[in-house]
Amino acid sequence: MNDVAIISVARTPITGRSRALSGYGAETLAGNTLRALREMSGISPDAVVLGNCTGPGGNLGRMSALAAGFGTDCVGWGLDAQCGSGMLAVMQAVQHVACTGQIVAAGGTESASTAPVRSINGEAFERAPFAPEGFPDPDMIEAADHLAAQRGISRARQDEFAVRSHALTLSSAEFVGEELISLRHPESGNSIIDDGPRKLTPHTTSRFSPVRTEPRATVTPVSAARISDGAAAVLLRPESQASGPRWIIRGSAMTGGDPALPGILPVSAIRGALKASGMGLERLAAVEIVEAFAAQTLAVADDLGLAVGGHIDPRVNAWGGALALGHPWGASGAVALVRLAHRLRREGPGAVGVAACAIGGGMGTAMMLEYVE
Image (cartoon, rainbow, N blue to C red; front, top):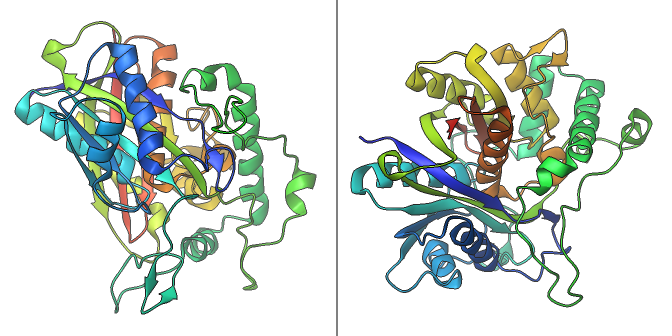
């Protein structure tokens, strides 16, 4: 199949559930992001592919394409792969572009604030099952606690990583701001910005108790990403038709493993993407791992050799991550790709990087990009 290039990227600000973006539905968040892609590139896509976890259904891909003003001839569809939804949507779009030669916008959107209450026989439930009866199906915080215990990742190390995420996000504010589209609060008219990053210290983090009461629990509200609202998307076309600054897809992978420990699956996904590209870790200028939990991100870095002596490789999440920004589930994989794209652009032509995320139910996904001009 033909090479595919990303020609523009964008994301909304990310805000906590019931905060500044709570007046925007999932399709409106995505519609604004898609519209920004067209304004950047001057190109309307032929199709839209969107990932989402908790929305109302009704085909958010098509709804968002219409909300963006792309016209009734622009088709759209959606998919759900939990936290990997946004990245898997881009992977699916790559295949569509390669097979059809069309221009496709893809990414993810999540409005935890407006997600409908779901129920079975009138009884509300917090989340859908990630695995059927007979398989382990832990809550994600429970899974992160178990992974931390299995890998010997201490509470102190998790707290230290959370402090790092916030500090890097704040110190990279100028770069991070380049990712954002402009959105205003529907009532006040004030500009909306990322509302999660703050100054943390070891003293601050030590004040938080673990979320779970189990004796070995170590995950706290600081070392777990906030539930959030947000959207992110990219615009893709055949590399043969692209010019100017862009990002070529060099490899991707989606892998499966133990549903009890989904947090470690980005390891096999990154290795799969590297194998597909024919490159090694030493070739990477940037690594983006969705920070759903500090324990999960640290375990992945440890297994890949990206944490030596407890110190994280500076290529990993150099501008911070979801621990500071928040975790809009269905969008986070696409947020990681947008972040990766901007980091590679600052590295210059020829820079290669990978973005990856863990998926509830025991899967992982990863995608490699190369920046060219």
